[in-house]
Picture: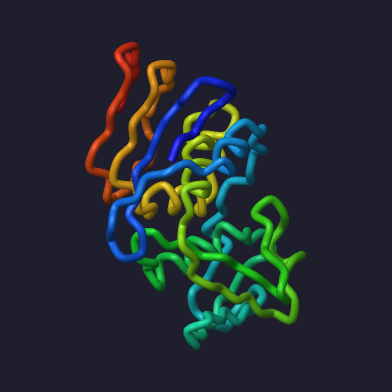
Length: 200
């Protein structure tokens, strides 16, 4: 898949499909998304969660479509990212998968306070395939100065877990990848002749 701004190709990725086969193609939705301005997102506050029921805070029931259910105590300052990170660590989604969190059939918004969105004291989650468009948006957030310091837990997981085996950057790409999380199954990383940035 090719990601571009205007006429300039920035990077091309090759991904594995659900059967483990490598595929390559063009996704116009990914191209258009990359040209949009990214909004800053609030930082995680992991101290706002308690893994055991009881005690202070609000008790939430977490339910998965696979039938799994557990209870989580959250403080008033808990964020959607806190819950996303906790569930990810608990269930360990496979490569190429991400979580989608809902409450009362409404998607939880990372930019809004958690408890304002929770209905009936319940949060549901489903495990969904990470699309190439998902990966492109998170990757762009990770390298742009205005968003790289406020990546969400979802962004970081998407970058790490995406089933991307190859990334080829065009000749006009010249941005640092220092500190950027790359896919765990990445095998090849190719840059243009003018690339001269830190990878550390």
